[in-house]
Length: 184
View 1 (cartoon, rainbow, N blue to C red):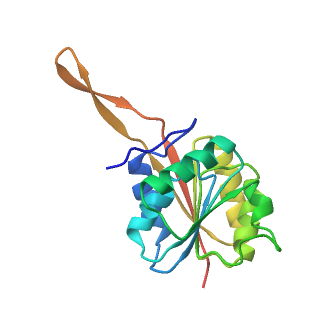
View 2 (tube, rainbow, N blue to C red):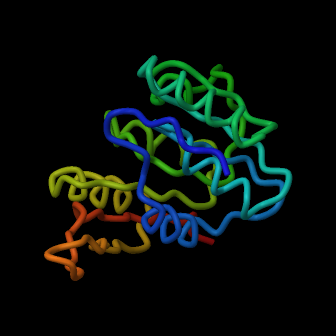
């Protein structure tokens, strides 16, 4: 099994990825945007869930793009485009992406604009991961304004760690998973 090349702020923890992707509802053949892709770990797991997934991995940080490309090569991820730049610009009209079925947003810079662009692209489901309360509130407000807000899930994970020959649990930082769905 290959090891994930890491960057600051990532990779997203496996438990968070599992819940986020379950809320996303990926389907075979979907066009999937990984906004603020970091290490590409969410895209790698998404490709295990849905066959023939087209992946758009977006990040503005050079270190993240290098890590994503390295991880995609290591894990044999095909049918993926790694895009450099601000997601709010790359998702705009005339950008390199025409349609998106599902989007995972791990980077929350310009979250209002990103959500607007995803709605314009008729994105079926959007999952935003956030650790700051202010970001959660902004995301909920934006999703409500756009008519896509579905729910928020708060996840707190603890991992076992040795202590004096026995086992204790050390908490990870809690994560909020904000879910948006295209209304029928």
